[in-house]
Length: 207
Image 1 (cartoon, helix red, strand yellow):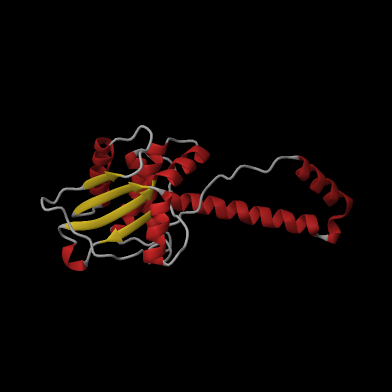
Image 2: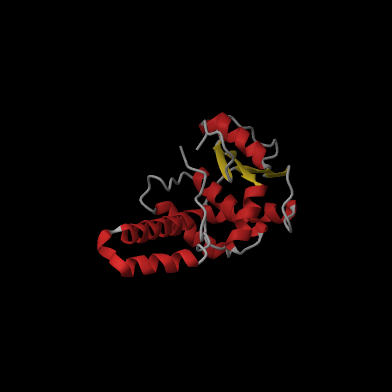
């Protein structure tokens, strides 16, 4: 997760900034969700949320993480001395969130909230890359409490399982011992359209 210097609002308020609009999601609705999510996660200090374009997310991702591509969510913690007053900032791509929401069968507004929760947990200090499932368990608990669909970490696990299954099937199809039966199965699979992707890999990672 990138670390940049950020400044708290003078009155300690959380801020919601829409550079790119999301269907059926207002500043007030997102502000209220942020408050509930912060309280549920135990995150102290003010929090700023930027809903922006994929082009802006690509620029931020390149500047702070060295990755020349857009991403769905980035979390920026405040400097250590500011944490009591200001937790940090979260930037989200409205375009990627909308696309993922359609693919996963829920609303763009719900997807934005899922990304906000994921970012809040990173600001809280969780790291799903190194914590042996601790963040995944906590995110699942909070999603249920906040009535949200499946989260980013869970989707990654589902996607990884699908990739592994596909790899196994291809190995069986290419095996000489599979014979005519394997060839027949391969033809049947070729005749069917590919299964839809059930999940998307979370682009944000705590660094």
